[in-house]
Image 1 (cartoon, rainbow, N blue to C red):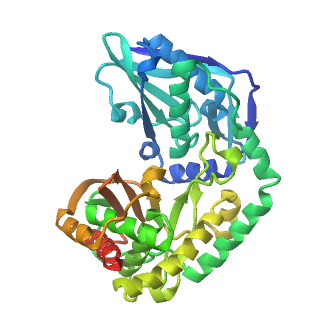
Image 2 (cartoon, rainbow, N blue to C red):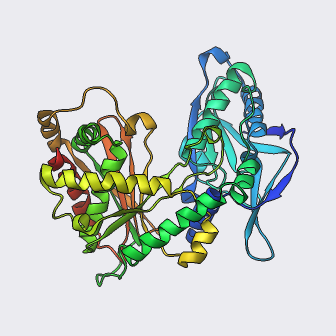
Image 3 (cartoon, one colour):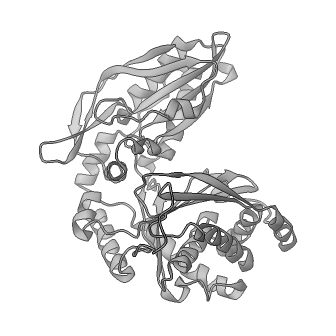
Length: 434
């Protein structure tokens, strides 16, 4: 069954340019093209609170409409102007598609691509039992929201189910665009200048020349490592060096990518959520952008980073490099493209774990506990992809003690056999640093 979550917002229709983060993800989706851009869809699942009673589909649809009315980015369509540039139109009224059924799952709700020009950028699946909605699966078009924003929408939907519309009003997407055209422009210019210097030092993509080996089929090969030992070791090193576990893993991934590429200088582009200001914490949009993480050449090949002493030197450099990357990940993507002519390391890092997993608290694991976990490491083949906008991508996910690192690589530039070497090298580097 299908129904519509009918909304009518109190604000006015608005037309304007894309925000910087929207432009970044829009360009990534454009490079992949149709139908591969569905790869960027993502989901959040909201369990209906017990205190909400036993709501039926119509009640849940109304709560969803309240949330859509609250956040103008969820009412945005992206179109192309006569000059070839993207722009967006924020609507006032319409209906969000909601499928109703007992057997819906996240994959089914997110599998169909969004048409950014014609579709509202969110859809829902209402999982029911005996006419009562037990879960709401939300699927998002990435031009409207990033992972952090998806969490905000899920939170607001829970509140709407419990108490009606959430209190107060968050900043709107149109407000962010206004700031970026005014007050934030100088900060964006500093970030672009940082990228210019960093890319000049790097000298081109990390995996620049195609390999001679025949391309694999599909073109982009993927492999996952599930490593309790890497999880535990990264927690220990996080506490020792005063950084997040994400920074520890980013440094290790950067060193190993350089080793596989045979380069003396390493660089990766971590995804930075950019919500450092209070006014942005409840803002629903795609605010995340890529930072530029560059390690000095003495660590680039990984040979000097082995063992505790070498890893200490690596982490001193990595901590400073990470701070620079995070500080300069907020910029006008169109201006960056003009200044760098699209140059990019094409070597990405995305830690998709929740904040509490990235920065653990409590007692850290000891050497014996880490060593005992090493035999538990698993290497899991994944199905490949035909299209992607990156030559080498590292995604970190997982639950406590089941850290998962997924590496995806373009087989025209990276031999498929190097993927396991990369993952094993990350684990050995971090565990050896303890």
